[in-house]
Length: 93
Image (tube, rainbow, N blue to C red):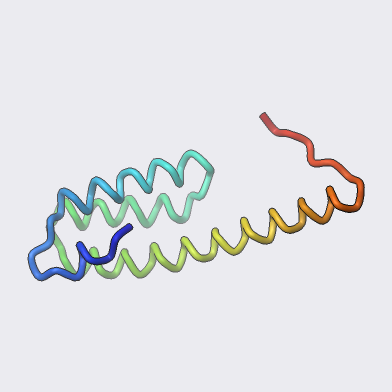
């Protein structure tokens, strides 16, 4: 999400909400519940036009995003090591 929109004194809450809604859907589709929960709170603050609440959620969302990113990077490295050692990764689909 672009942070410039939140840094403005006059925030376009509808625009921010649209981005957060999309991020919430993407997070939910891959099972990232904590990110989804922060997005839900973020959307409530957008609806209430609460600038400070939005800024707080933005920081929480960044923290959760980086936690997920690091975990996924670790998972992908482990999968690469398994394949390099001659193993295989079963497809879950």
